[in-house]
Amino acid sequence: MSARSTGSARVNARYAGSARVSAARPVGDNGPVTEDRTATRPLRTRRLLTVAAVVLAADLLTKIAAVAFIEPGRPVSIVGDTVELVLYRNPGAAFSIATGMTWVLTLVAVAVVIGVIKIGRTLRSPWWALGLGLILGGALGNLIDRFFRSPGPLQGHVVDFVSVGWWPVFNVADSSIVCGAVLLVALSLFGVEPDGSRRRDEADTESEAEAGGRSGQSGATA
Image (cartoon, rainbow, N blue to C red; front, top):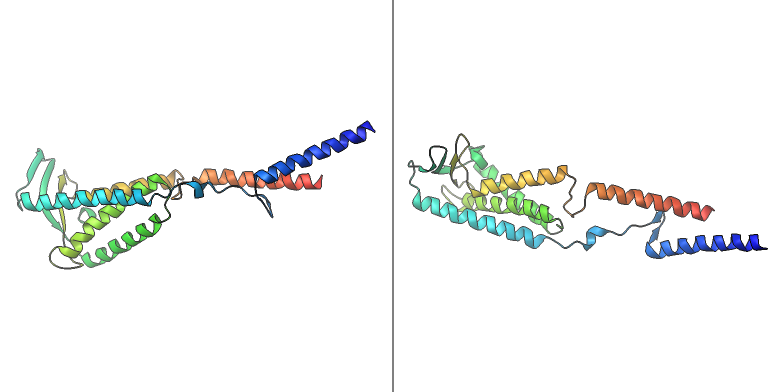
């Protein structure tokens, strides 16, 4: 009699534990469903737009100052001949790349801006917001030159003014785009996703869900 009652107590305790687990975690067809932690993270759209606005303002102000105070063909020395301010009208991309494809580069910049804004609407990682904000601000800065500077819309020449050694002349927008791109590559290499999650965390979550499913099935079988 005592052995039977002891066995019944063990069974009841086991099913009571299973009930507590089921109450703590929703149960799907393949076992317990883990909570989506990414949904609880705040959106970072405001941070992205703030970074982009700061970069855009800095780019526009420095270009206006460069046009106003630097005479063409007369560089301003900052650190000897290594670092100079030189007024240069660039028809190409960042760092004077593809100088004969101005209108194509303009369309590419428009596509980049649209893509960044679309991604930014669901962005939850602060680091991705920083990287995309740098790219968005830089793209908008150069895009304004493409539309409003001579020789005309879609073919405007970008104002570059920073010369460092052998490196091509660049501006604030170029630096921002490169820094943002490097940051996004680093985030991808380290497994940081735009929604703020990490690929390793997702793998751990899936393994926990599978383990919970197996334990639930074994408990039901027993």
